[in-house]
Length: 340
View 1 (cartoon, rainbow, N blue to C red):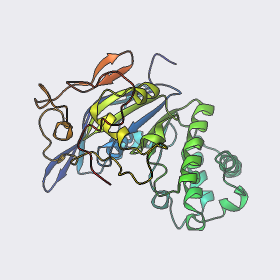
View 2 (view 1 turned 45 degrees about the vertical axis):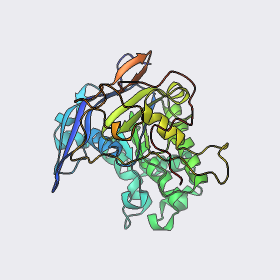
View 3 (view 1 turned 90 degrees about the horizontal axis):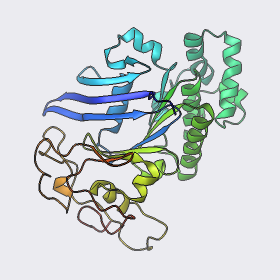
View 4 (view 1 turned 120 degrees about the vertical axis):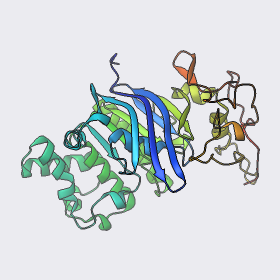
């Protein structure tokens, strides 16, 4: 891999003004995504994953503020003008959103939605763009692409719409693809097809991929590295296989313990993490997982909380008392156990 990461996120903060105060949805997050690398970002709903993705793209709403650096190919995206961002979106960085039904224009045929980016960014002719659109639909597994180009979004299934969204994202050959919960509301079979498609396309094209999900099984086997987010901060980061084989943060272990496996007894209650995410407008001092953790000790509740620290080669954890380096013990939930 190149010594220069494709994407460098440094001390990223987001501030969203609400009636209850300022919410720090992303609080001092830093990470890299190398060229041709797939990074998984996981965590509970509400942990700040999607806000972080939109901050990287420069798509935060007007009421939101952002600080830090998002360095892409030598430029800080946060410092660019709206016009400069338009030159990057689609052409260099593309995003697949959670709900293709909302992302696709319901009154515009797939043909136009798929070709307009190529015509704008690449300067291709109408006929060249249409030929390329057919190739893209075939690449992402859409049957009968000639007919599908004439369809409106509502004439396609959820899985087909998501494939079209991926085709649109790939149309201008981006260097970085951000997939934010790309399998939301799809059945399990279609989920696997979409996820395998993303991984295959990422490898074939040698592009960088950020795969965001609340489901650990989504990133397992499909990413090179994984970052675990909790309450706006990174809890753990490292090579996917290493983190999943021996997670050191209690939250990561709790997530894994709460994930059903094939060995799970049929009528046994599911394991849940006791408590809830902290109030984003008034987070607790120190480690934000401390109120739910059964291994709280000295230094856990002291501000600003443990920093993300490398504990072994390429494996970092933000915990004052990391779990032992051993194969995951699924009985260690990191919190109270409740019947589901």
